[in-house]
Each structure stands twice: as structure tokens, then as C-alpha cells.
Length: 588
Image (cartoon, rainbow, N blue to C red):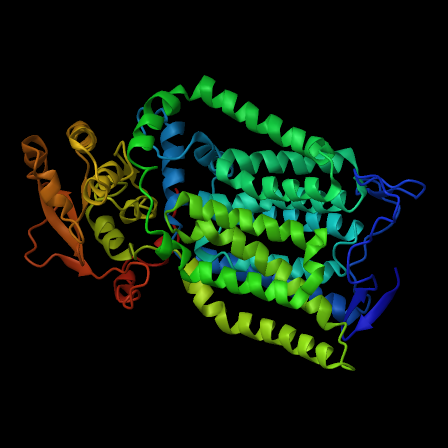
């Protein structure tokens, strides 16, 4: 390939599409009478070119990469920890202290959700730094490894023209854009799956893959599937399309997929052996309460992020034309559809479920639009229209990034006011919750270096059982069953408070009055009577044990915000006394 200048950035001069297999190629994608195309990344004799040769362009590339890393780090450090990740760290700490998953801790997610963050916790303890800080660093490292390795596969198989541009776009899409979805399980699953998707497209286009490259891709593919079964859907769709294109099942049995299946089966076996309670205890509970609850289809399909995905999908089809059928575009496009399908199947409407579809679509759309922008056909009306459309796509994406960012910033509430109050009253406090929102105590628990004493993260059992009673046409037996789950939830909470006598109880009296719900049990009401109101943030009350709470006729500590609230920063004034010490969750 020869290099050609394109402004400051120089791009590799390839055809606009993927290399095609000549007529006479076998249906399994291996050519007859032609040199076999291979992807070799180990001990390759041909150096990989960034696609830029001038010193100023290389300097600019380095500065952009450094700015992306620094910007991501600052963005993630100076905001509270993502609720789900903070809770999974809390579970990890409980496991390290000797408690047992699905008996002492009733977690809705399968074991891999917890195991995924356990290495970070162990390493943080070993080197004595905050797990939250280490989690940011390790995720950035994973982004660099995944994008760097995938981009080399894509370049070696001629799926991209410019290595530097792809890495910049992918870095921005997978490091900066995630915001509140950063390091969530779906985010990590996408990073694990990228090499496998690149290999699938290369194989469809007739390339042979080094077995070591396939092995690495297979490990990532298997890890992604173990996080959630739905996250295997992108690979399944891509492989299914490849089988149709090649008119052969050979693609299904390549090494990377065999390794992925082996990893998944090994994980299932480990769950059966080491976490049997998940199957025998949690699965019946989840299948009767959590899984049946599916929120309004129209509302989920019409979310801001979903609309952004539809627009990007349409823009890719319009600007790429027939090229969209080439494996280099169709494979990742099908993967985004798979991720969108996972979002719809889970039917909870949470933005991190949708992020992989948005993140991957951002990469392929912008890379394709910019690539074709370097090949304008201004001599024809069609060419001028196409160029204008590409410019319009980029401008529209930039204009809409604010709405997309607000959607992906999945922060639930400002915990600083209550954290400051708790710090004044007790050191390393024990904490319980009476609410259906685990976000009220996560990351609050880790911000104050506390210990969460609940068996459940929140009253999610009652929440979903109530939903089924109120929104489904259950028969009498079904209603009795749901009521039994509600009683079970309240009994666990009663036992937790009686057993531990926590320093604080965080109570939600907003949309549902959870204090009234708790007082329906005489024993639980008696236990709560030993507590005094020590603080309040709107409808969230901080109850402290009587020996900790001073008499205060006006114990309000500030306001909090929920996602989408216009007064999200009204509690900032209360942060002064809490200080930089808790700007991030600090694990001491």
C-alpha cells in the first residue's frame, strides 16, 4: 500500500471496500489458485504503520491520545462512583471478610458480575490504594489493549485505512463517551468482544487467522458471554450472517468460537460447583419477581439513547450505501443490533444496557464517514450530495453529543450531604437501608468508609412483587405468592437490623413511604423506634441510633438530585465541610 497525504493526517491508500475473493473461491472462503491472505500479528515481518508520517501529525496524535486518557481519568475521578460498581465492591469486601454469596448476600446478578471486580479489589488491597482509583486505571488499560489489538487486526485484514484515526475515534467512544456507564459490565463486555468481531469480518473476507490471535479473541468472547448470556447475541448475529455469506458452517467451528464456548461452559460448571445457591435459591426468586417485570416497551424503545442509535444506524446506511454489506461494516453493524437486542430483552431501560450499541456504532459511523470524506466526488451532483451528507452526519453528531452525554450520565443522586452528616456522627459506620433504590447507599457506604449490613442491596424483592400485583392480572395464588415474597423481604430486613444494630438507617419516603412499609411489622417498628432522625435530603431520611444522634429540631442536611432532575447541583454547598477527602469513594 502506498501512503497519500490528506491534510496533516496521511491515510493508507486502499480501495474503499474490503479486498474481494476472486471468482472460483470455495464457499468456505478459501481461494483456489490464489495466495492465501493471512493475519499474523506475532513476529510479523511487516511493521504496522499508523497512517501518519509527518512529525507534526505524529505529535498531534500523541497529544490527542494523552488528552483522551487524562480527560477520562479526571471525568471519572471527580464524580461519585457508579452505583452498581460501588455495590459490587461492597459485595467483594463482604466475600473477602468471609461472607457467602447468595446466602449472606442476596445478589440479583450471577457470580461473574461480582467476580469481574474482585481482582481489582484484591490488587487494591495489595498495593494499598483505593479500588475506585484502580478500577479507573485498569479500565483505561483495558480500553488501550482492546482498541490497540483490534485496530491491528483490522489493519492487517484491510478493514480500516488509517490506524491512528481509528484508535482516536475508538478511544473517544470507549473511554470518554461512556460517562456513567464507564467500567459497567456491558462496557467491559464490549471491550472483550472487539477482537472477535474483527476476526469474524476477516474470516468472512477470506483471511486466515494466526491461532494465537484467535485464542485471545476467543477468551474475550467467552468472558463477555459469562457476564450476561444476552451479551453473546452480537457474536451470534455476526457469525450467523457470515455463515449465510460463506454458505458454510465452517465459520462456526473456528478456534475463537470453540474457545469462547469452552470458557462459557467452564463458567457454568463453576457456578454449579461453587455457587449452587444461585441455582437453587436465587433463580426461583428472580424468575418469580425480577425477570417477569418488563417496563413499557414503547418507553424503552423511545429513550433518548435508543433514538440516537436509530439515527446513527440510518446515517450509516445512507452514507455508506452498498458498502454497508461489506463485512468490515456489516459485522460491527450486526453486533450493535445484537447489543440493542440485549438492551430490549433486559427491558429495564437503564442506559448502561444500551451503551455498547451506541459506543460501537459511534466508532464505525464516524470512521466510515471520515474515510469517505477523503474521497469526494465533487464532479457529480451525487458526489456533492454524498459529501454534504457526510459533513451533516459529523456536525449532527457533535450537536447531539450533549443530549447523548446526559443520557449516559447515569448518576442517581448526590450523596454528599448525608455523607457529611454521617462523618460528623460516627467513624467507619455500619449502614442499613429501607428503600427500593440501592443508589441511596451506594456509593454512600464507601464514601464514608462504612460497612453495609443488609442481606439485600435494597427492598428490590418488595418493589418487583408490588409491581406484579399492581400491573399484572395475577390470580389469587399469584397474589399470595407475591405477598409471601414481600413478607420474606421484610423478615430479612428485621433480622439484619436486630442482628447488627447499625449506626445508621437510610430511609426513602419519596414515591413510596418505605418507613410506613417497615412499620407494618411490629418487631421492625420496635427496632426502628430506637433511632432518631439525624439528617434529611429531600425525601431521604438519615436515622441514627439514639446514642449517636443529638437532639436537633431541624436536621435537614440539604437536597439531593435524581437522574433528570433540574436541581441536581443544589446540594453542592454542603460539600464544603466534607472536603476533597470524599470527592471520590475512598477505601482506606
